[in-house]
Length: 124
Image (tube, rainbow, N blue to C red):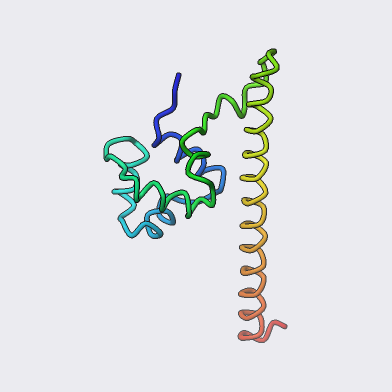
C-alpha cells in the first residue's frame, strides 16, 4: 500500500519529534491548516512541499519516496529490497540522531533556565 504524502510528512515529523504547531509556525499557517495537509484534506503546493523539506532538513526526494514499510519491515529476502532497506535505515538513523540532538538542546536550555530560577530565588 502506497503512503499518501500527508502520511509521509507526518511520519517524518514524528520521527524528528516536531509538533504540528512547530511545523505550522515555520510554514506561516495555523496548526489546523497544517493538520489538514497531513490528513490529505488540503492539497500541498510544490512551494509548501519545498518549505517542508527545508524545515525537516531532508531532500525533497526523501520525503516523496519515504515509505515506513521499507524502513521498519525486515522480512525482505531479496538483495534489491535489502539495498532499499539499507538506505531507508540510514534515513531513520539520521532522523533519530536529529531527534537526540534536539532533545540535548532542549535539556541544555532547561538546565540554563533552572539555574536562572535558582539564582533568582536564592537557591544556589
